[in-house]
Amino acid sequence: MTERARPRPKIYPPPEFPPRKAPPFARMPPAVFPAILGLFGLGLALRRGLAAAGLPGGVAEIVLGAVAGLWAFAILAYGAKMARRGSVLLDDLRVLPGRMGLAAASMGGMALAAALAPFAVGGARVVLVAALLAHLALAVLTIRVLLALPPEGRGVNPGWHLSFVGFILGGLAAPGVGWPVLGLALFWVCGAVAVVIWGVSAVQLARRIPPAPLRPLLAVHVAPAALLAVTGTQGGVPVLPMVALAIATGIVALLVVSARWVLEAGFSAMWAAFTFPVAAYAAALFVTGFEVAGMVVLVLVLAVVPVIAWRVVTLWGSGQLAARTHAAEA
View: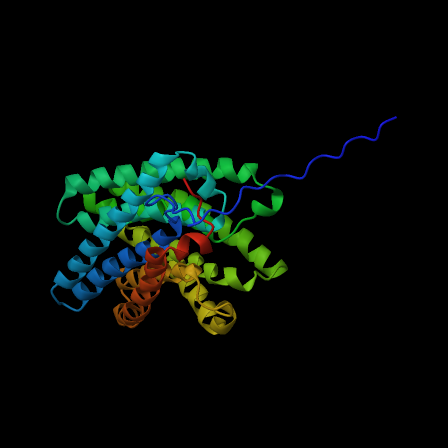
């Protein structure tokens, strides 16, 4: 009997020289969008802060206009990536930075609607509806992707707030475009989902300490509480907005006390998770009448958010952000 022939070793292609250069935006990283969302939050909080101080709001509108341009450019860049291969969207949703980034992208549309509402109600309505529909589509696709992942990849994490509670940001713009009922509906539905995520996350945190690189994501828990305080106050909901503000304040206090532990891994793109939550917290303080505390937090927002956003956007411009956040290539 002849000996069975051994299979030939796999032949790998030789390395390319010079290295192949990816087409423009073929690896556009969704992870840039949380930082842009943080800049939107800064502009919206600054608008409220200047109004509370009785100062002209021109600076806030300039900031919001500049951020809107950056967001639109990033959206077009990701659209160019999807035009090359539409399924790249699902690839990006398979990793945590991609899921959070894409959720923040559609939330950026809701923030843009809130920025536009005082000047162009019709345009703000169009942007708000488009952003909510995009966020809904992403939420459905996220569920589909999560169900296909192994069990260890389906665990609840703070990023779920962006994917499944992020609609609450639409409630910020809804009263300004003449849809207060929509704002109230988003308050109640998103509030219920947020409570479930907080509860499951608290149990998980008690059982398992998150790895150091993921600890900055704990700041995301602040955002839904702050936005619930804002939307509930705008909608005239009794008591619950103050409860939401108390939850946000408690989480902020815990983050401050454990700052050294949270920041142990050093700077990464995950630090963008601090930007929008702290800006939303400042806005919540202004809306609920705690203007002095709001001013203090707004100063912190102005000192911290631009620095983090600049570093993340710089990583994007240098091409490093895609590699560091495992962005898919079209």
